Length: 85
Image (cartoon, rainbow, N blue to C red; front, side, top):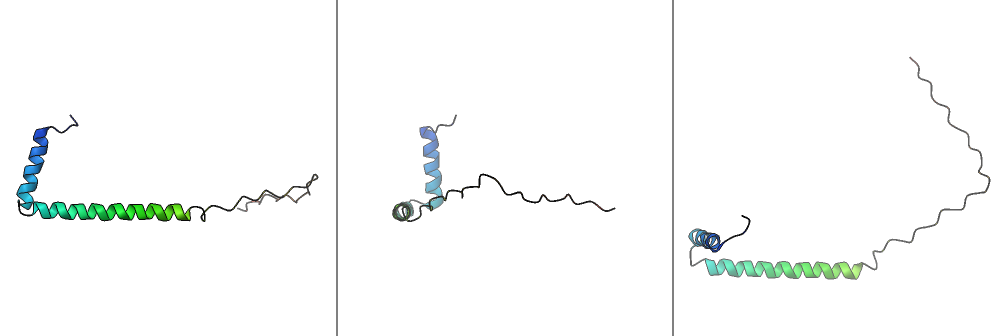
């Protein structure tokens, strides 16, 4: 059930011929080939740009937290607010 048999492919091909006609099929295939070629070149260009900018885009090294004093300074605690009715 999820596989196409030869009959399925023949029906799909017949539908394409009916929609586009036999004269337009070579032009459609040529246009599809050009589109795929352009898409492939754009993807490879994006990959090249990504790999060349990767070293420059590395995050800055994390700074270590400042050392805390051995005896912490007492900080005043906030008083809970009382609700007025």
